[in-house]
Image (tube, rainbow, N blue to C red):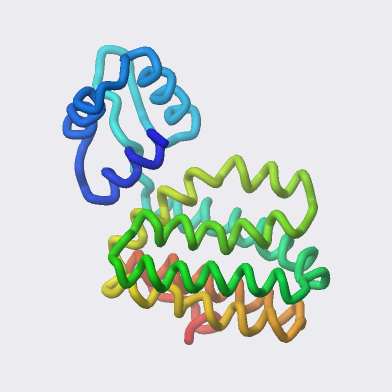
Length: 207
């Protein structure tokens, strides 16, 4: 919970001094806070140096483009190839619920809820792949993806439209065509990430 709380503050542009004051005000003891901060540092969400302030980590455009996007593409497209042939209506219904939640939270300008619904959509596909090693990789980058989503959603002109970016992917998945679905997933990841960074989308992935 503390991790999500700090990330939500980071998405609002509030720095560590404000966060530290709020933590003290809500009555938490220092021991659990130190443990939580160490855990967040291990996950790459905080940076600290001896005798210096602990600050919330930043993600550079270079890191997103050259590290996070390629890892997501590898993990999620492989997961989709494994998972989609096993999908039944119950699985598609869950993804529809994720989209409905994205729409509702977007309209309410609830960025935290929007990010969690977005993550639930993508994580479901990875889990349904039933590949343990793939899930381990996903778990290792999950918190970084969440933080990136928080930062990314701050750049969308209209967060009420985020759910619409997922509809073409879900529609293509419903056809059962694995190759088309993987191509659409690739386009989706490039589109949502590069456009939010103000970078051109390669023509093959553009709308």
